Amino acid sequence: MRWTLRFAVPASLLVITLFTILYIKIASLWDQYDAPAYAWAALKNTFQNSELDNPPPIAGKAEDKVVVMAKVEAEDTEWVAEHLPDWQHAIYTVNPTSLPSNTTLTTPLNKGHESMAYLTYIIDHYTSLPSTLAFIHPHRRGFLDAWHTDTPLHDNVAALRSLRLPFVQENGYTNLRCNPNPGCLPSHRKNKHITKKVWREVFANASQSVLYLKGKGVRGEEYMPEEVGAACCAQFAVSRERVRERPVGDYEGFRQWVVDTELNDAKSGRVMEFLWHVVFGMDAV
Image (cartoon, rainbow, N blue to C red):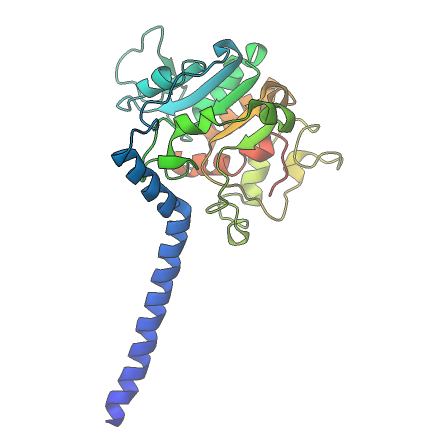
């Protein structure tokens, strides 16, 4: 009996610990994916005549706002032209398998995830930017693909149709994700991606006037905030004026860092994901 208790107690503690860890992980994913709201929206969309699949057209000046995204060749992005006809479209294919046509936008290198396309658009169109730029992912919606989009069915069409353009103009920058999990919870702000070395490399030779350290009188690469946090996952809108607060050379420098860094595609893209708001003049957290 004594031996049984000796093994039963630690075994029970181990099981309780494992279940606690599992519960915390599942609860976090439940929150990240906004599972209840998604399930309810999917149910209504299945049994009711919902406009989620075919939203009605809306008015707007296509020449004054643009959707920018990166895609692999196999991804279908026809939904952009079909459901967002009032937006300009700049869709970059990062891995063309054949010589691209004159109408196919491509990036200099398939690295940095979406950041290479985002920066390439800004660099190539710096002098002719529309008033509002929305940078989003190529998947329209889906529980697993687009869980980071805070709309019913995680739908990017709904996200852009509900985007308040006057707010973007007033604020300069807005993250299209409102849920701070993951990326901006207190436990996420001291992250392994934005090290002092990486910070200094990214902001090396960047202009002083529009960095996070506004008015501090030091160069960007010489200073790093104690915490850096942003709601994931590199989907945001920014005004033309905010983009132009930096000279085009800054964006060329950021893109060159993506090209030159020893970090791989995923890791260099994650660095930029945590820095977009800083690039566009917002506080580090």
